Image (cartoon, rainbow, N blue to C red):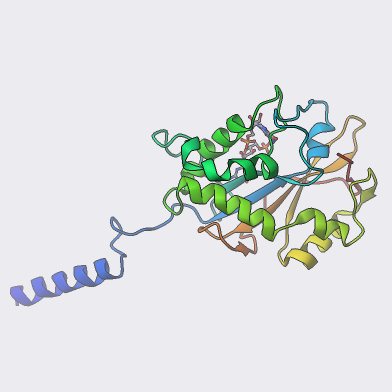
Length: 231
Ligand code: 5GP
Ligand code: 5GP
């Protein structure tokens, strides 16, 4: 009897290891999804805070990447998960020129972008290292930007960065129609108190590869009329 149950336990352990589901050995992700966040440079600059162009020059008049942020389904999120895995430029050297174009920094004082990417990797990226490494993290964000061309989606619906205002429903509808998933729109307030289109959040699976419907949206409201400033 004893030898049978020992055998069964061994078989069970083998089965669990085989399916990689023994909790200590499981390759489980410790987050549920990513927010992929893009910022409109005209809105970042058009606030009481000033903005500074990167040392590489004025960015294109396009949305830029802000970050790829691991999140939990309950709306909370991990941050600064691994002080032993700092940003390492040598791991992403092949991506730097694309990052300068697609992930420009607008904070002052002017810088090359290294400080912004370091902050994003160390605060957010390190919390995804159970799923993807540093190179894959930055490559994933760059690929996602190609899959989610926000400016093209808005412009083809007549929503242009010309200082005019649009409704939240029109902005969300244009993005959903073109990209296929419902975005979260974050607004900020310009110097005259107008609500403006600041950031667009889309949700992504834990591999960083495919867009998904958001399991939960951030909180916050835009005004009824949302300005889309020039840049
Ligand atoms: P704010 O408080 O300005 O909305 O956000 C400040 C920073 O907190 C963001 O840039 C981001 O790093 C982090 N953050 C804010 N909201 C979220 C969220 O819902 N998920 C994650 N992962 N990070 C967030
Ligand atoms: P988060 O809000 O993601 O925690 O952090 C944003 C940090 O990155 C801030 O400390 C901010 O000063 C810096 N940063 C550098 N460049 C940019 C930029 O272009 N946009 C935003 N939102 N933050 C930037």
